[in-house]
Length: 478
Image (cartoon, rainbow, N blue to C red; front, side, top):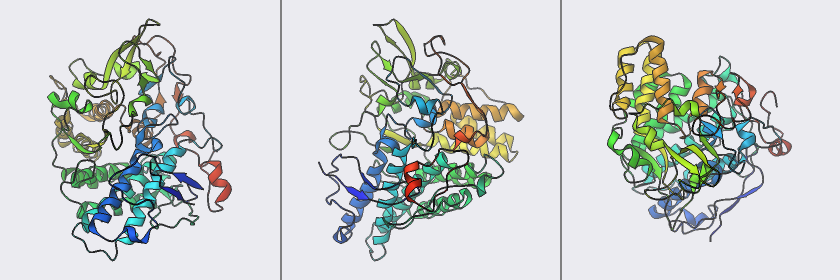
């Protein structure tokens, strides 16, 4: 297998040498992005952007990791899952918020994100003299991916702008735009980081193709991500405007189960095809191993969340499942997302990153915050009418706000968002004390509550990075 080895001293988050996922990508014909001959033809740039995308599959990023990554940490840290006693104990300290600088929590996310950023910056730096017909699209993809990586990192390690009145002036991350392995960047403010994310995404949305090949971003995907960034910033009208530019329809109720078994691509805006011979990653093992009668769950659906799915809500069937460990007589409300394709239980499914439903839920929340309750309810109902046989509606005031938040929780359960939603709303984590078995009995998670504003909502910078970069400042309280 080919290995692409970088030594990058991006000391805000990455120190020393690291190696990319050791999967061979047959689309990438060169071994080092430092090769000056790697960026010549249109095919070279197309291959290079595929290398940027490949970084998303790193274990600490979207590839699934026992240490926690984008696939699981936003739910493990929040109230959507309960620690399962039958599992291997993975991510237990993360789930219990027992992390400090010495632990370097989520360090795999640092590596994956900044590997991607480094690759994107190499492509962008080498694109200045290239005039191929695919240049505008490839440059736009690189900027969008660079923005996505920075956004994921700052969401964990910095405050979210709407989280508190001091958030924009607080410590963010280094926004890296040069392919320099020896820089020692200081952390910028949250406000400055978000502004640069918006710049990259706005430029990307202007230049990217309406449609690209499977596994690549397109205009609808970039605008959906941009609407989320604006929502996090509290820029409500901008979030609405970006969401309005998304034309892909929400997956209808009849397609929802199939989406998560890879039987269809309905409503998907951006996903990574996860099949051999290129990938074939068992991403589902972050939640459980085994089949429906011999399940070994790492985490199960929290009973509090499970009971919030109405019986006519198709997401209950699509996202959760009844499973057992017959050897011990245990019954679970297990997590079905990532479990496997139709008839399979190996956890090998496509990695779904952006979906059309989000644009409408972002729009609904932003409209509500502008006091436009009727349009907010209409945007919310675009999703609800595709999920229930008898969808709820008609709420006003605080009840409408709560309905928007509930639908967001249900729609994106086990899908990278819950921790950030609680954080940006300034809410605590409340796990309600239920156990890990199907009826809510059994053993609860060790820790049940994290107060709003607790320092643990911002991850600490790894001490190993602090030791070598004189420009770093640790998050308060660590």
